[in-house]
Length: 82
Image (tube, rainbow, N blue to C red; front, side):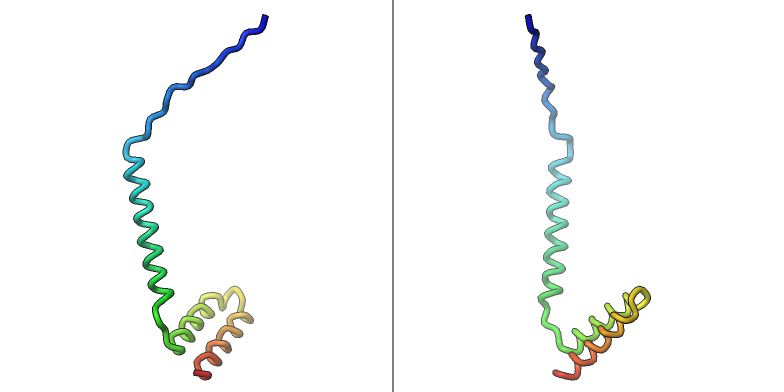
């Protein structure tokens, strides 16, 4: 004869505050998305774009000086061809 044992786990309730924490996390993520979307969609002049590229080149100059030099040159070309 074969015996089958079934297990009925006890129901697990939602931890207190989890719904509030999830809503807060979603609100924070939405705020960050809106902030960065507004920043990336803001109209920029050619000189502002070139300056942003120079700032990026400065940040990677230590790790990849050749690429940073290329970025500086691209920023100069972008600014002067306006």
